[in-house]
Every structure is written in structure tokens, then in C-alpha cells.
Length: 257
Image (cartoon, rainbow, N blue to C red; front, side, top):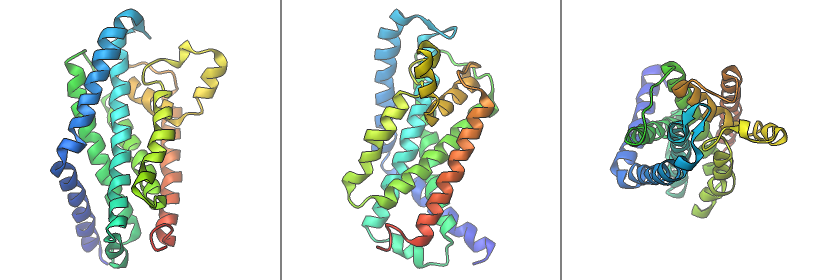
């Protein structure tokens, strides 16, 4: 399969994922916007007034980058796990596997779909945030790279979840029991400097903490974690998850069984 044909195959898969997101926008875009609006109203406007400042910013401003990243994480993960499992369930994933399309393009096509949805929802939540607070981006390049790399991480995670899922209930286990707790304990709503030293060290084992803080640094210029360390963790996560995804895809685990 020549390079031009590979590009056409990849572009077709990305367009399919994009059309899927746009076609059911009431399910993919609207619910996160409503949920995040409620977070801003309840945690930001009501509770935030009692909390006051955090790391030198009012609580609404401090919380906004965390909520934007929360929406990117959950939606990039959810898009790939539902899309690829749907392809497995409908048996049309086999058509891709027997085609000349390389496995890495199958993987990156689905990952690109997850990134697109993550960025879409992140942009919508950013607009929502601007109704409640003012955000002046301090480091645009860090904002852009962090949000894209994080979306890639969780798109790959969603792919692995979809590979092992055997029924629709299985695609909600990881988000419910692993992803959600790690996200809420990843510094979205608070600075880990408020925690006792022991729990600060425990929190540093949570990879989401590094992603949230890197994005917050890009927006506000403040972080609990060194930015270099955050990028190292994110890139390492991509490498590990990509290698695992390609191994599963090449071996046909959970697909050809």
C-alpha cells in the first residue's frame, strides 16, 4: 500500500469519526457543556465564594483549566472506547483488518477521532468558562501541546479498553472505577499543596495530576508540578499505551477471538 493510498485510508477513517461526532452532537457535545456549566455554578459561584483564593487566583479562575482538561480526558477516552467497541460489535472492524490498511493507521485513525472530540468539547467548555471567569493564556504553546498529548493518551487508553470489552457494560467499568477517581483526585478542584506531605507524595503517583497541572501552568502560569516532569510523564504514557495498543492489534487479541 503506497503512501498516497495510506493517507487516503487514514483520512477516510478520520472523516468517519468526525461525522460520527457531529451527527450525534446532542450526545457528544451538549452533555459535557451542561455538566461543566453546573460545575461552574455550584463549585465556582456558590462554594468558590467561601473558598476564596487558591495559588493567588480566585477559585473560579483556578478551577477552570482543571474542568477544561477534565472534559478533554473523559471525551477523548469515551469517543474511542465507544467507536472501536461499536466496530467490534458490528463486526465491521474485520473489514479494516483484512484490508491493505496497516494496523498503525487503524489505531491512529481512531485516536485522531478521540482527539477531535476532546478538542471540540474542550473548546466548548472554554467558552462556557469565559461566561464565569476571565482566562488570560500565559503560555499558548504549552496549552496546545498539553491538551493534544493528553487527548492522545486517553484515546489510546480508550482503545485498549475497547479491545478487552466483551459487552457494552465493560466499556463503562474503567471510566467509572479508575478514570473518574483519578481525575477528581488529580488536582482539578484543588492544589496538592493543601494536602499533608504524605498525601502530596501519594498524589504524585497519579498521572492525571501532571496533565492538569501542565495545562493550568499554560493558562495561569502556576503549577504544583515541574513542567518538564509533566511532559516526561505524558510522553512516557503515550509510548507505553501505543506499544500496548499495537501489540493487541497485531496479535488480534480481543478482536479475532
